[in-house]
Image (cartoon, rainbow, N blue to C red; front, top):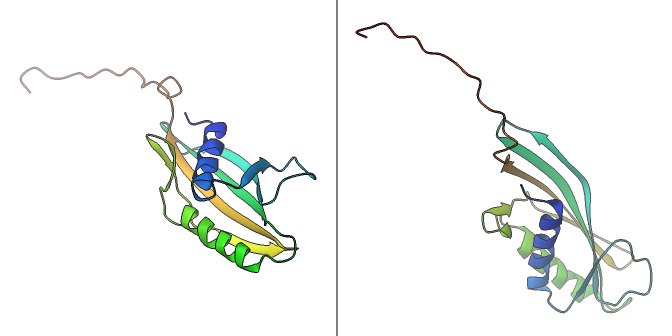
Length: 147
């Protein structure tokens, strides 16, 4: 089973691959942070059984980018949006483990008060662990001799 902490680590690694010098933190910090900086949160994580052997997980990634400058930043925000689109545009591009990748239907962007905000919805399916899967009931087969 994939843990949410592993999902968060995988998404952060994908972002860091495009932005190695940009500081990344959770939404807990309200002041005194470095610029440029990403603020990161997973919103509405949930899961539901799809079959007796498969589970569906859903969540929304919210990312806010605070550019280097508070005032002169139009090109930086556009370049950042282009790079984030590259990270989140193709299904299966965000590798969490060797056998598990995330798929997204895309992302949306909005700039408010000179801060770039991105939102992306994720849906993933994973097999239930062997010990979590229900066992097959016992059944008997009766055959007629000669058939």
